[in-house]
Every structure is written in structure tokens, then in C-alpha cells.
Length: 164
Figure 1 (spheres, rainbow, N blue to C red):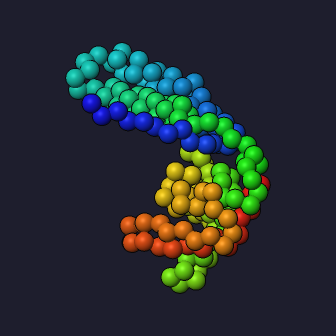
Figure 2: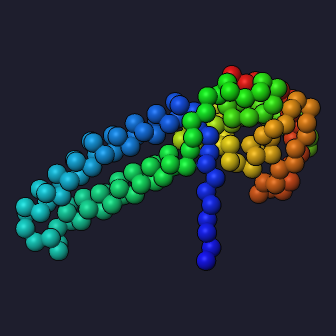
Figure 3: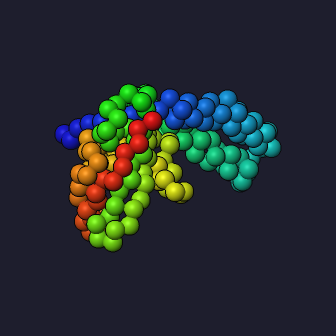
């Protein structure tokens, strides 16, 4: 028997609240609205050919799956204050500037928890569980890390660390 062990991930209080609020909206607003649509569709009679009924039931299943996914995500997290780690070491919440040694291009990353990731903007917010973040955690300015990505292996040098 294969047993999966899920490692708990850090999340900021803001990220935790954002996911919790999303669950609350789904449970208290969206699900009751869909339940009402199902009720109205049932009152129309024959359910076999009632497209509105089937669409509402499908939407209800989708919403429940989304609620379950978000609750599971929160269950696998623990709240961390971003300022709780050492200031000169890459850790949760740090903004890290790295130089790709292949082309000397610099990129900035912020290490975040589930629900906080954002790949647009000047500073990409990446999950602490991502390969790049995992390679950088615990490193200091001047350290080099190698990361396997789909395009091959890259070597990054840590240029700056800004811990909040």
C-alpha cells in the first residue's frame, strides 16, 4: 500500500484569510443560490430532459469540489509571520533577486504560500514548494543554486535578499 505524506506548507495570515473568505462566499452565497436553482428546476416537472436542473446540479458539484479543494489546501498549511526568520537567509516571505548565470539576467521572486502565488509583475510570487524556491531556501547572498526546470538545468546566483 502506497501512503502519501503531504508536507505542510507555510502561509501568511493574509493568504489564509483570503482562502477562508473564498470558502465562506462559496458556502454562504454561491451554494444556496445553486440550491435555489435546483429547487425551481425540480418544480418544472420531468427531470430527465430538464437542462436547467442538470446544469444546476453540475454547478453544485463543481462548487462542492472547489470548497473541498480549498479546505484541503488550508488543512495542509500553517500560518507563519513573514518576519519570523533570519534576515540574511532565504525563507518564507523573502523577496529574492537572482541572476541567471547563463545570460546574466536578473529576476526577483517572493516566496509565498498557497493561494498567494502570482506570476505577473516585476516580482513573481512563487510557492515555497516550487523547485526554484526549494533550491533557494536556507541560502545566502552570493550562494549559487542549480534548479532543474523543463528547459533543462539552470544555475542561479542569489544577488539580494529582502526579508520583511
